Image (cartoon, rainbow, N blue to C red; front, side):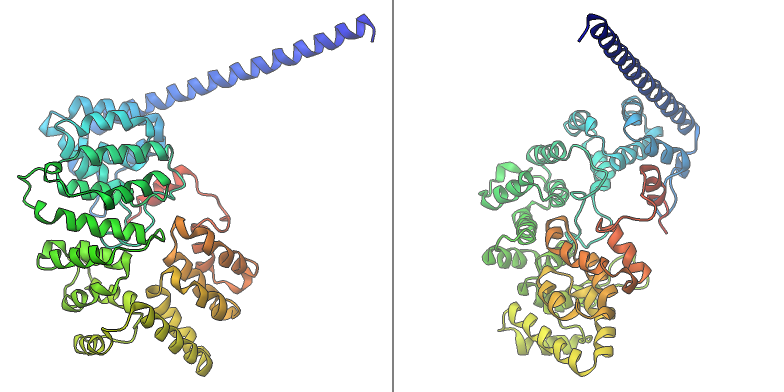
Amino acid sequence: MSMYRKFLNARQLLRGWFRLSITVVVLIVAGIAEAASMNAEALSLMKVLEQQNPDYLSDMHGNVDKDLQRLMALRFQATTVVQAAIDRMQANPKRAKLVAALYRVLGFVKDPESVRWLGTKLHGSERQIIHDTYMLQWHEVFGIGFGNDEGFGGWQWLSGREQWITFFIEAYASEPNSSRRLELMNVLKGFDDPLAMQFFLTRRKAVSNPKEVDPKEVDDKHVDAREALLVEAYLYQHDVPVDEKRILSAINALIDDARNRALLIGTADALRHQAFVPYLISTLDSAEAGVFPAYFPSRSVLKKITFELDIETNVDWSSWYLQHQRESRKQWLQTAFYSFKKRLVRDPAGAHQWFAQKASYHWNEIAVLPLIRAELLPRAEFHSEIAGWINMTYSEFYRARLKPVADELLLHPEQLEDWAKRLLQGRGFDQPNQPITWEMYVRMSNRRI
């Protein structure tokens, strides 16, 4: 190659690097300018919020006003401004409602950069307001007490998951209040990660130590029993065999106090253990507070444990249990499956209706998967109901086992109703026609009715 050609190639290379450098600098400058613009917008929004009537920052359904929604939409770009505002106003009683609303914004956004700031707050006088506002944004809306909900472990928007798990474990370890410790455990149960699994395995092995909790707390008498149920529920949902003695002991310790009802029903829903049945029968008429029309959670969970979906009255439930209490839950499930298969042969249309109206809601556990694959998946008329069952059964931990069924359903989308397609899209098995952006997510999260 001639010297002249080498010179030309070198000059072209230098030009390429020069153009690339300019492009990089332009992008960096643009990014800095955008960040500065968002920071200025967050500051402007904060000034407006401080002038508003704090009584109207959210409606009766929990939807926040447009300025708070915009702070949420700015996401991580607003974190510094929101934290500074809380630091500035938290000592002013007149600003208490605005401070609480700002904590909810941080809890909604979940910026991992706020971890250190939150840790400082948890060790100060702001601990309770964080648990009353911020921590609530880490609790899944659906589910009873513990529930089968997947929590935020599978939340598509979550950043810094290991950082968050470490934060919640450290917060748990330093928290003297038993109720708040249970709340932190209820957040951690949403993660399937090895770090979370190790936390629950460690708690199972932990020897009760009275020094770990504040003796002045009125509810410390049964803190070990409450923790035991949450630990066993988490481990059961991750294929770890349950400790039967711990479950029985915990139930017996908690059943006489009505304050434990939500925890008992919630962990019964998660554990599906037959030891809960007598308690559930005794609380069949206990309605969930603040729900209209009346909802009786014990009835729903009892059906999920026994797989008996056609029993309604208290007398009939007591009679059923008297007859079947010596059988194992495995036997109950086998009986229910056998009965359903007979119904499927005798009356296919009736079996389809029964499954759609009852079983898809109450047989929502992975133990039903073999029945789904062998009996229902080959029948096109059941495909939409199977999508519903997947949605009700879903957790990130079970995703790999549910995916082959979802994939087979999606091979024939014409056999799925629109609502079934949307459910599969919502669980990430199919791409939605319009991908959801963060701004769209903020708007949808503030359309509660």
